[in-house]
Amino acid sequence: MGSNGRNSDGGVFANSSFAHALANEALNMPVPKPLLDLDKSMPFVIVADDAFALNEHIMKPFPGRNLLPSQRIFNYRLSRARRKIENAFGIMTARFRVLRSPIQLDAAKTTIVTKACVVLHNMLMGRSENSYALKGFLDYMTEDGAIIDGAFRQHFSNGGTMTLEPSINRNATQTAREIRKEFKNYFMSTGEVPWQFKRI
Image: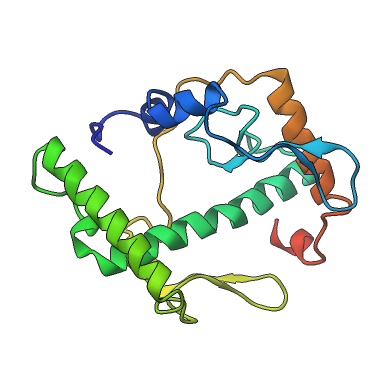
């Protein structure tokens, strides 16, 4: 909050106190744990898209178009997880219409308004968890794994997804690539779901 809209989202994140705390292991992240039915411990990660740089705690999709089936499965599963984030923003923008368009205030006041919306949103969610969790408003999944877009997505002009500016920093450590590879392999073995191959 408070950064200029013309700045890339990856750059804004990289310069944030949150990113610095994450890099310096000051966020009190949970200790790595094994995935279901596996012995190897894996770190907890933040789900991201191409706007962010891959690292040990930020997972982003495999880039490119000519991807292996296992890479496409990973990207699909990551995208499904990101829908939870989009649903959270969908609930908040439905509650606070001021967030549906550029706020006509200076940066300092816009930051205050946005923070107030977040605090009020969290308070309301704590008091009535299911008030907006109605089928049709949020995304929901059918029995065969298909995701049906929620009604909140009509408020986004680009067809229901929030596109972010790509990150300039594309360098990823070998460790981060290995972690992504482990998640990819997990989604193709123990963590496989029967309908994932129909969705790529």
